[in-house]
Amino acid sequence: MTDFSAKPTLTGELVILRPLDEVDYDALRAAMDDPEVAKLTGSHHDIPEERAREWLRTRKDQDDRLDLAIVDKATGETVGEAVLNDWDPDNSSCNFRIMIGPAGQGRGLGTEATQLIVGHGIEALGLHRISLGVYAFNPRAQRAYEKAGFVVEGVCRDALRWDGEWVDEVVMSVLATDWLQSKA
Image (tube, rainbow, N blue to C red; front, top):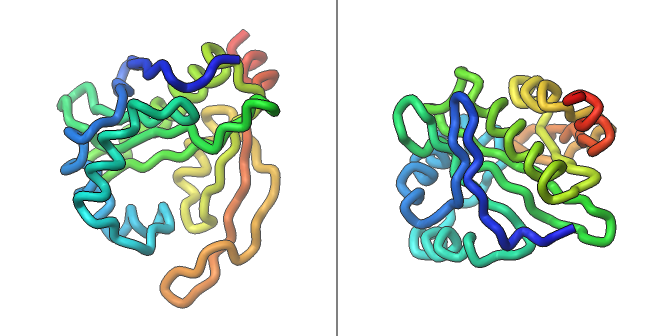
């Protein structure tokens, strides 16, 4: 198993995943400023611009995570990000998260981006398990994850408080054995 220091560009039919950088700030800020995106990602806090720009500048230097911009091939615009993080090298596992702004929603971009980064994690990096959490009020994302091979493992009850209501988090994962069998 290697680390995450190599930052690939992954190309699909609909999207290109490329290393995230400061040039993506405006697109990602616009996405996060969308109230629906903030809700679906459970984002309560606004990050100051300079701190966010610095964070983006340093993504390519990280060897324990992979942060990729999701670029819509049809427009050439950044519409979101796909991330492998919380790497556990001893257990060949990590977490996955994705965020897609309104400009990239409803056209299969998230599904393809998920499949590309999961395939890279399992096939190129040798990961055994990739996990994620999705809030119960986001069934569209859960369906996209299932299309990419993720299986529901359980529920973290009342994991998020949103607008005064408690929301469950559905825990999902994909194992290398399942992924490779589905591709055979």
